[in-house]
Length: 334
Image 1 (tube, helix red, strand yellow):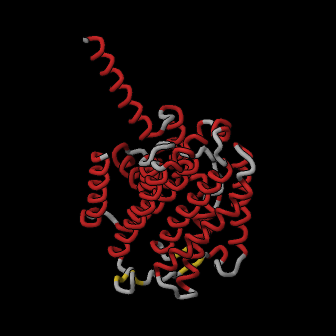
Image 2 (cartoon, rainbow, N blue to C red):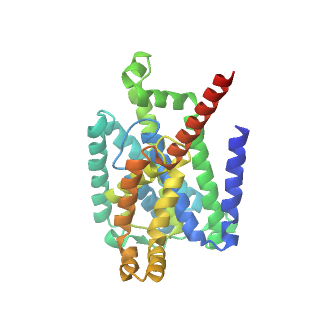
Image 3 (cartoon, rainbow, N blue to C red):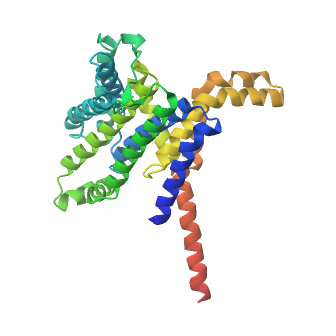
């Protein structure tokens, strides 16, 4: 436990120092928002075993709700974020009550259908700005004192929001509630036979996951001072699944690693392609930045074929094999 805490503290110090190392703050804030989104999704799929194809609905609804509250109603930044989370949680409650009546692929398809209904609502609603999105969302101030229009101030707020969201997930996973969720994932009939109300636990997990995804969406609207339809598309729901699978399903840190990989690919593939073109003289590499989807798809195929547990899952499995081998060697010598 102490070692794990030390790793988290060291990671926090490194992330806090990144802006002073020349790293673009907006880029890191984007990674943190997507990492929180992926962690929220992983709570549902990795620990409860429920595959949702509609999680973008919570990201988008919170972004629009927080943006509208800040821009039109003039709420303080803190209340705007909380309002976005509340809207996402309420939407999660409604969708969850409908979706948890089914399981497996039927559950996934119901969440996808409901998310598409939410998407078309955002497309036609006046307050969202339609295809143009909700632009010019004011960042405001934190506690009426700290000016969030400065990227560095907002950077540390986003860091704090991510830390709070991550801690909530960590605490939930390591609580009795989390143990019941794992039991649901492994054997739902046996969990039901033990007297647990499985539908109630599924719904609680779904709403908590939706609220945390909404926290990521509301925070993202502050970072980019806008909320757009891309936050609520089915492609975004697919992207968060990709992040979770690449990083490691059912691991706490895996979705964070997956988010880093995917966002890095989205933003740096073009630079990498130009470097390859200069190095090899092959002109085609200059167009690599226009083929981000293909590159991400290839990486996903490689991960599924060679790293089925994800990056973090494979590393953990390798460590377990080494420990088992060492224990076997020690026993043989004894």
